[in-house]
Length: 396
Ligand SMILES: Cc1ncc(COP(=O)(O)O)c(C=O)c1O
Figure 1 (cartoon, rainbow, N blue to C red):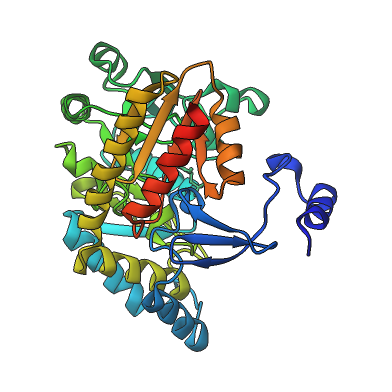
Figure 2: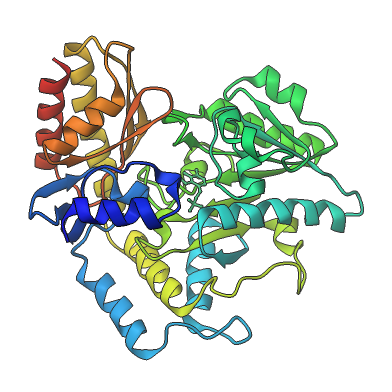
């Protein structure tokens, strides 16, 4: 079908939440490239919003999925599931967490983590309702995760929201100290705010969150939906910041394209849920687990994370060089293959994104005016060179 015909159907029959989409329909992926319905080839610097971490030609991944489709995709969590158990073991051993719950999306996993925090305090005999999150954060689209999201533009039409969320400016120690108290169930924090505009937490701040949570008996929950599973070059970005949250939430790269989310918990938080407290029909089914198990093994047993680090360093250097030459670039932020270019008001990140698409590069925007890059982990230097050369011309 021609993209205009798809757009006509979409506009008539699809819920209009995505408005007018970019006028491209991809039909195939190869390596780090996407091919559209007209046969045009694009280099992918988006990975389906930090999802397709393995790129599009990982034969082992395809085989694992095909084998599962051909044997059994789904039964139910009434029964034991070997891949689910092995995945949980691998994730726990690699991260130091004690147990795992598997759901279907990032928002669902955050919902589970928020419920876990409330249940934790309830089980301790001192129920707590409050959550503290960061201004500019993004945690999902369900009612609770939308409330957790520290951006009022998402809130207005959906009030009344879930009670007891407080929003504080990130990297502000005084605001942190003032907000967290004996009433706080948990502090929810992204190690690098993704949708908010690639805003990294400093090591000191992340560690201070840990200390303040310990002081008041609150849980620390890291939303690693975007940063986790290798995006920053580490399996988990939070551990590299020097503090271990009680709960860490994953999705996106965990399934490399198959919908799956997870929360990992440790210590008393891992014991808070009892039978019947939480569940999911699809969560952790055979298909999701074969994807997540393959991705986890790939990240842990190959040198792909070292490649992410190398390419991340190279990419950042190229973007820093661009900053020197292009006055419109205010700042280069991020880590590993989660990078952003903060642009001044003389250029629109959205316009640049559209022009890059015309030039054959798929990218994203974030925050106020940030161009965001989230390429597959198998991206190479020549792909980065082509992108930065094109960007240089566009920003000149
Ligand atoms: C940090 C973060 N948290 C939560 C979510 C929500 O995940 P999902 O869209 O899978 O529900 C996202 C999605 O972009 C995210 O980046």
